[in-house]
Image 1 (cartoon, rainbow, N blue to C red):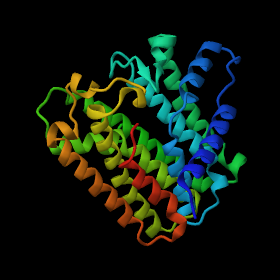
Image 2 (cartoon, rainbow, N blue to C red):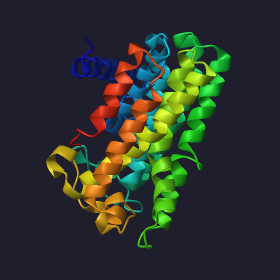
Image 3 (cartoon, helix red, strand yellow):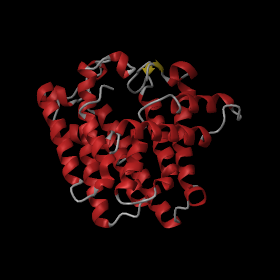
Image 4 (cartoon, helix red, strand yellow):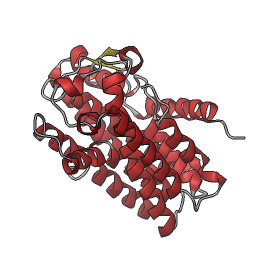
Length: 297
């Protein structure tokens, strides 16, 4: 029987090891920049995006040992996005994962540069996949493209831009869906598609994994919106109510808490339906979808 808790713990330890080895050492000049990069990237977290990489690879019968480069890359991109999200010009959050945000510790300028450097280092690690993990150059190039699309102006960054532009506007479903599908969902989808490609997925399998990723991202962001309203600040590691303070479009603001919870559950069911054609090898993806509705942070 597969156990999510022990598998998750083991994968997290492996991802932490990979990140610690991949990032420049703190003593590498300029030291403060590399210290700032490591501060946020090695500062804990669920490593959910890395798990999705591994889970997608396993689901299509691939070798999970080949996923290390992509797993590290998606976590570096996620860390960079959190550093920039917390800046005063963005969400202006002073705490992340229960400790001071990067810009509080290192200053705004160094935080911006640490984020920039993490984004760049992520793609350097992808370029090393053929040498380090035996990934073919053709698959490597395809994964680079997937992650660039997921992180760029038509993905995560684009979602953040619309999120800022829509603050204080009257909520509407189309804009909210755009924000969530890109700001959060695009990187999840890129992680999943990349993992599936590493595992040698067929086009049919890749299409199903893509559908799973789209519904997974939406379910995750709806629950994130809910937790910002009713979650425990200590468990979340940051203050609650920030979305409301900033006048952001959220699912509870548009639909109310109860309907938002129903919508999250519906999205999770659609995640599971997308995996109907997969064997027991997709157990981790199924468990991670179910986890969304249970999470407290």
